[in-house]
Length: 263
Ligand SMILES: Nc1ncnc2c1ncn2[C@@H]1O[C@H](COP(=O)(O)OP(=O)(O)OP(=O)(O)O)[C@@H](O)[C@H]1O
Image (cartoon, rainbow, N blue to C red; front, side, top):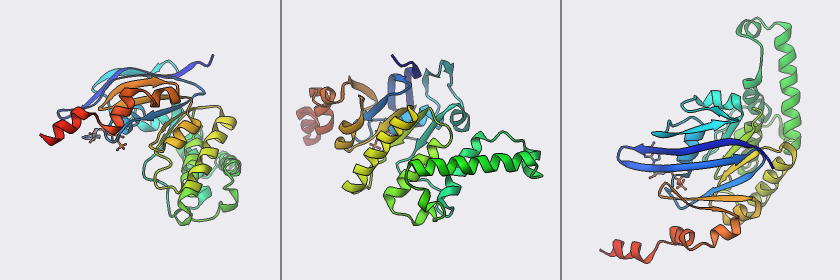
C-alpha cells in the first residue's frame, strides 16, 4: 500500500465570524488521485489555500512527508514538493511557453547569487540543464512544438496544459488542480482528462482535484471528499459517494432550505 504524503488533523479557518472550513482531516496517499468536490462556497479553494501556505489555519495541524508544515510560506512548500494551478490561469502571458516552464524550474537551481550574477560556468551548466528538462516536460505534454510561442496567445486548453506542466516542473510530489476544466469546451475537457491520466502514469505523484465537472471527476478520481459549508460530509468511492443522500441534498438543497428561503 502507498504511503501517506500529506496529512491534516482538524484544520479549521475562520474569516471574521465565518467558519469557512471546520475540522478538515485528510490522509493523502503518495500516488492517489483525490477529488475535492462540493457546492459553491463549500470551502474547497480555502482548503487548497491553507495546504499551499496562502492562508494560515485558525487551528489544526498538517504534515508533508511526516514534517509539520503549519505556517510555512508558499515558496517553501513548493520546495518541499507541493505545486498548484489556479481557478484563473496564472501564466506569465508575455513570456514564451518554454520560459514559463524554465522560470518555475528555477526553484530547483542550486547556484548561488554570485554565480548567477557573474554568469560563472556553473550558472550556464544549470541553465542548459534546466532548458533540457523543460523541453522534455513540454514534449510529454505535446507542447514542445509551441516552445517559442507567446504563452498568452495560445488557445485556452493549451494554456491550461502549460500551467500544469509548469507546476510539475518544480518537481512536485503533490499537485493541486483548482477547477482545471472551468471555461473549457467538451473537447478541451476530454483532452484535460487525458493529460491528468498521463501525469498519473508518467510521474506517479499525488493529485488533488477541485472540479465541478462531474464527468471529469467520475472519469478519473479514485476517491472523493465532499465538502459542504466547510464540513466534510462524505468521503470514499466516487460513484458511491455522489449517490449518497447527504451529497445530493448538499448540491440540490433540501426542502428545509427552500422553506427557509420562502420565509
Ligand atoms: N479571504 C477570505 N476572506 C473572507 N471570506 C473568505 C475568504 N476566502 C474565502 N472566504 C469565504 O469562505 C467560504 C468558502 O469559500 P471557497 O472559495 O473556499 O469555496 P469553494 O468551495 O472553493 O467555492 P467555489 O466552488 O465557488 O469556488 C465562502 O463563504 C467564501 O466567501
